Image (cartoon, rainbow, N blue to C red; front, side):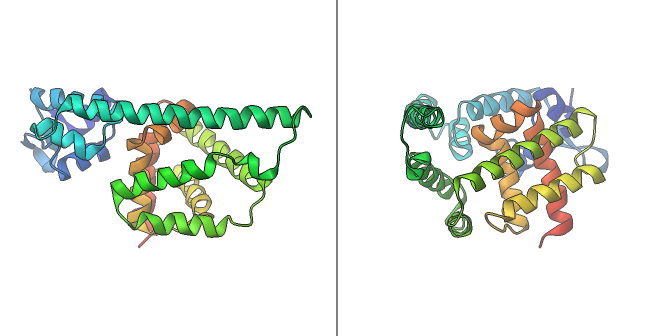
Length: 252
């Protein structure tokens, strides 16, 4: 028995675009193609995909997943490395929690807090995240971070808070569109993606490849995926496809 890309995407909860990407990088090559060039998968491919998705859910980088599946990398060692990352993430969250508690106390008038302390821990987290993305996508990522630092250099706390509220509101509207059955390529959805691109461009200006790369990150990075999927189940993958359509139509 064989399954098409669309069928595998539905049963696995991933996206057709992700499956095509796995094919392109040699991670999950289909058994063959059917009428019209449709990719076809067999049972062994479903089992391999299950293992891929489990490792990705555990936070193992895509390149390491490929090494694990080919036997070039020890799966236990990969998971131990990820355990170290989780511990580091726990420390990061503890710092942020302390900052939030101090902010709450400040707003209640129980603690003095400087404007600098509002963002304590965030700068270090941003720098760490920049290094993670550089390791995954190359040095070109630094251009985006440099643009973002430059464009937000004069922002006050209220500016960051407003940006966060607007981003959440946009995510909620996207979630509502997905719930009512709108397809990623629908005109109304593409209008929402245009808003999303404008919001991103307030920080840095991605070209087609960069915007598509950002779309992939929404699916592949647990932090982004959780943000969107908490709004609506499967929203990260849906948005990834919608961004790809918009990028191909509007960016060079």
